[in-house]
Amino acid sequence: MYPTSGIAQYKQVDVESTIFDVSPYELINKLFVSANDNLLLSEEAIQHSRLDQRSTYINKVIAILDCLRGSLDHSHSPDMTRNLDALYDYMTWALIEANQNNDSAKVAEVRGMLTELATAWSQIDPSSQPESESTQH
Image (cartoon, rainbow, N blue to C red; front, side, top):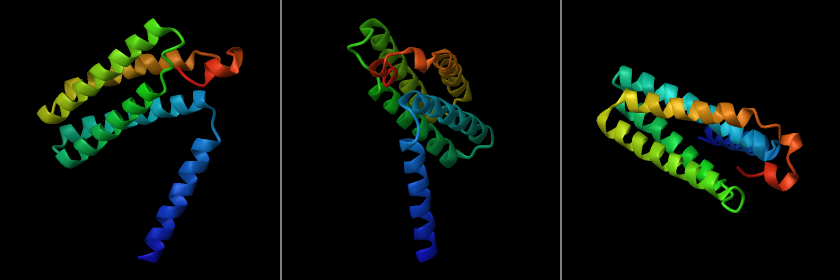
């Protein structure tokens, strides 16, 4: 039992040090990558009828969408952030529906939307932004 808890603690420290060592811009990039990875895994789980894994992966993506929504700065570009908020909300509900109906097409739809957002985000040069603007999207 102790070795497992030690490994778990080590993993937690590794995750925390990774999070604290990256810029907010890079953290958003990591969220997009993790969401995409989990969406791919959920599609595979649907194809192989691994329902428990499907739910786990979809729930991880929903949590990531919540993080992305929480990072929105509504005082900067209110129209854009309102649209992103609505898009994240739509993706969340689409994933809930995909989970309930074992629907890989819905998962693929969300993955496509997130890929477009990730591509747009990756084209931002954080060094050209004032410090306060590069910390939130």
